[in-house]
Image 1 (cartoon, rainbow, N blue to C red):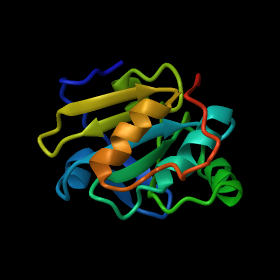
Image 2 (cartoon, rainbow, N blue to C red):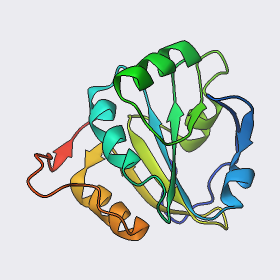
Image 3 (cartoon, rainbow, N blue to C red):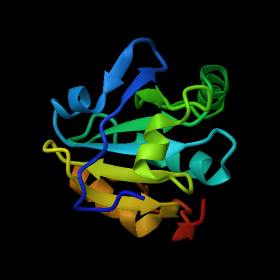
Length: 153
């Protein structure tokens, strides 16, 4: 799996809402976080709504679905997200997932404008997510909200 300090592999993925996006295009607007997920993953179902709270912050978040478009849309019906969604499906051979060495989902990568990965988080790790929220300048968890410290993917 790609680690902090390494160059992020480039990609060209289909956007769920139409068109394609490359990593280079996405980085033109500044740093970003990519979170790889599968619709059937309970840990992803926990993590993505929290990550979605960072939308509109200094750190843009993109979800990368390992499912086909129809299954991804069903996930979004159950777990509405504002963040843009990219498709890295089996039909396409999982090009981004393979390039990033994804073993478990959710897997999150923070990528700087120069293309270097500055943070990596596999599974749901509350401390790592709190650090991400601090970087984004926006709270991710509400006071009194029941949030586990860790949940494996």
